[in-house]
Every structure is written in C-alpha cells, then in structure tokens.
Length: 145
Image (tube, rainbow, N blue to C red; front, side):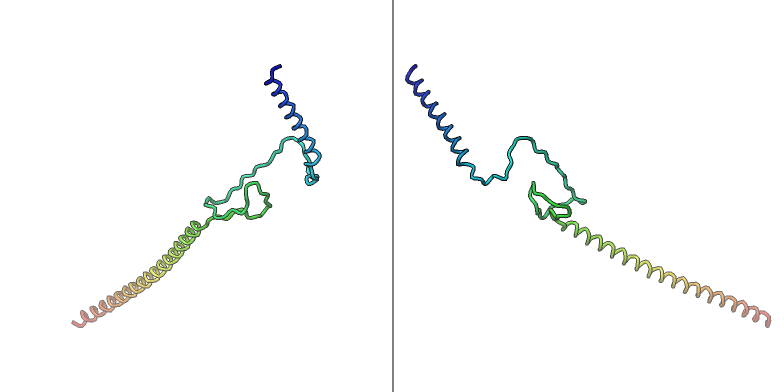
C-alpha cells in the first residue's frame, strides 16, 4: 500500500468515526422532548382542492386569507372591487328615473290631447248648433219673403 492510499484510508476512518459520534450525540442530546407529541412515519398526504368562484366577474380589492389557510362556512375570504358595479347601478337608476319621467310626460301629453279632443268636440257641437240655427233662420227668412 502506498502512502497516499494510507492517508486516504485514515481520513475515511476518521470521517466514519466522526459520523458515528454525531449520530450518537444526536440521539442522546438532540431530542429534548419538545416534539414528544408528534408522530412520525412515511406515506402520502392527499388533500381536496376546492375552487371558489364568485357569482359575478370582477376585481378583488382585499384578500383576508392566505393560500392553504383553513376557512369555515360563511367566512369572508375576499372583497370584490365594486366601483364598476356601483357605477352600473347608478346608471341603471338614472335610466329608470328617465323612464319614469318619460311616462309622466306621456301621461300629461295624453291628458293634453284628450283635452284638445274635448275642445274640438265642443267646437263641432257649437258649429252644428250654429248650422241648425242658420237653417231655421233661413226657413224663417224665406217664408216671409
């Protein structure tokens, strides 16, 4: 055996002895009882992934949980940015008020037209009465001539 081989063999033996001493020290002094409530083992953990979706599409303004947190039923996990939805609601309300105003205008226009119709009918009755009176006047005038 050469000197380089002997040095290599000695270094390997020293490393092996140091490793064994480290394992013994770890077993004796490393476990200080803090993890006595933990069980160890190997295996596979399976989780159920649940997708959460909103009824309406939009942007999120605040998220109250982190990925992997446990949540309970009914817990608020995020808030939607409702500025766009609020603007759409105000626009719809304005259109509704405009439609109500249009209905009122149509009703008043209808009332005005009905009033004009009644006035026209009164004028027709007046003209008919004038016609009848003029016919009577004509008969009286022709009879005396």
